[in-house]
Image (cartoon, rainbow, N blue to C red; front, side):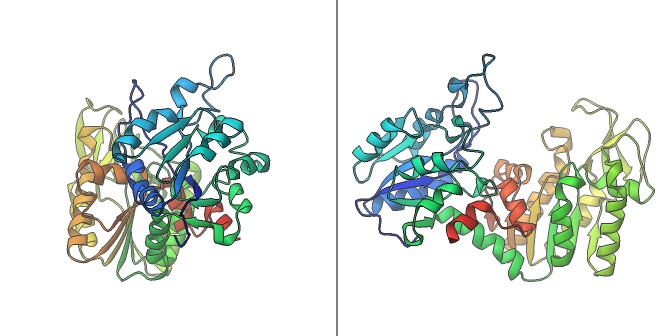
Length: 401
């Protein structure tokens, strides 16, 4: 972040899309905390920060009369937590994103002060990358800093279009964005081997491009979660009522054949914790993953799979983890994901480099208090996925021009 912030108003795009409870209080402030080093640096260097972020999807969840649900989606909900974390810093809120009031409040900011403007997605032009809206946003600061990796894959007004209104020497990535790019690049370009990728989640279709890329990159690929059963069915296995994508069976076999040709080891869970219903109260039984009876479904990896996967992870030098091993939200089916989290932490302690990205895998390491025992925890689920797939993200591309 090689910019001169002294006496400057800095337009700072962050990702404060945080979960709230029914009283609109922040229940997980991880994303706010991860933006603090950039905010504090700007203030310490004598600048003032005009903070922009989105919160939720207000355009898709409007009131019955078609109006924006301001009460639910206002960014004002994050201000108390941000103030608490920025002890002693004056944090103000502007009830509009752009326009006369926003310009006046930004202009009145003194060095060391912070202004949070309203949810960028209250304006329909945000998600369309509207140039007129981005131009109004650009009027709120003389410098632009993008620290919102979580939305870098969106070609939105506040994440991509706005950057064109700032000359190259007037814009920069924040510390979080720099770290996200550096850590993902380390896995893609310069991994120590063996490299093991752990891929979970419900659907093969969601991770198709990632799996294609990983077969060219990794030494080992561990596949867990609901997506594993599409591979088992493709191989002629009986998967009972387990989740499956019948239109992806050919693709699953194609990926397995490509991996074999490239001498990449693909590990599927030998056994599964199955249930007779999609419920935490269902009857449970451990079955071989290729021999699940009708009426039963695989909802987590079994003990044999946990043991094999752990062994592979502990013998790795670079680890990438994206997606859970089972229905992690239900306690009876969370053990597989937790076992993987412990194994990744243990391998990291042994000297491996570990990158964890993707909602549920991040939630697992956070819940278990292991977030400081892995090398890097990404804040961007979809953005990290697209970056690892080899795509150029709009929010990153815009800063280079």
